[in-house]
Amino acid sequence: MSAAPAHPMRAASLMLASTISFGVMTIAIRFASHSLHTFEIAFFRNLFGLLAVLPLLLGAQRAELRTRQLPKYFVRCLIGICSMLAGFWAIGHLPLAQAISLTYSTPIFVTIAAVLFLHEQVRARRWLAVLAGFIGVLVIVRPGSADFSIDSLAALLAAVLGGVISIQIKQLSRIDSANTIVLYTYAFWVPMSLIPALFVWQWPQGTVWWWIIAAGVFGTGGQVLWTHALKLGEVSALTPISFMQLPLVATAGWLWFGESLDAYTVTGAAIILASNAYIAHREAVLARRAASAAATAGAVPGE
Image (cartoon, rainbow, N blue to C red; front, top):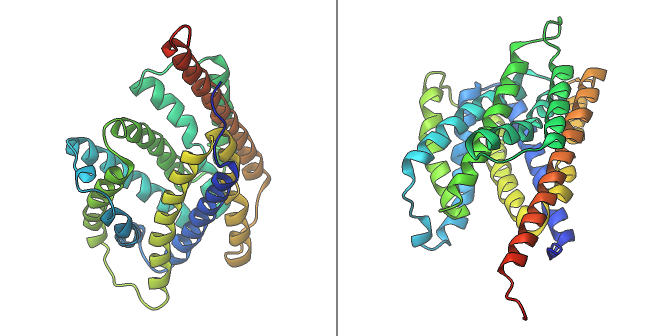
């Protein structure tokens, strides 16, 4: 039998803090988008995110920050920038609840990418969960209706690319540590995001500085908290906590941006979240079985 998580309450607290941090980042991006182009917001989010994470990286061992996978980091970060730009565009142009609901479809594409790139075996029940998730996406996006927009496709593109990125991180983490991945990600992200930002450049004014600083700090903080939460607890138990971001940003959209929830977004989001919860549960069950089988196979008879 696999051991239970050592610190389940601490893991849950970290995941909740991560969820709130990502929610604050989303709200900050929305406020900043009133004055700045998406390309600039992405650059400043990465710049201030790098500054926020530097103290953690400075405490790491020098050997830990070396890598032999620079070409892979370049590709991963290029895809990551495209995903970030699409996601930030959606946050700036869609109702917040709709934008975040669509980003929750990322685990659906992670499952598909795992089959294509990692050759993982996915059985019927998880494929049904993936199909249900797609139905939820269609309910929100409503292709062919008067409410359909290119902004919805931007949110969906961000989710698709996010699935590819998750697989790439799994591949990179086989050799490199989490600190190494964070360092090279930001080292590439900052100059990569600066290039498109230069074409639309204008200096932020007044309170916009606070919003872009908040986007960088809370975005990076959310990533760090999320990573530590997953080290202490099981994905299947922690995933539902991350769904709390949706009511947080929906409330912010109602209070500050005059947005309201429609039945399609609520229904589609519920389907996507249920699909995510089942996929996370099945992955946790399979991981425990694999660990148990490995422990049994490695056991010495008579001990």
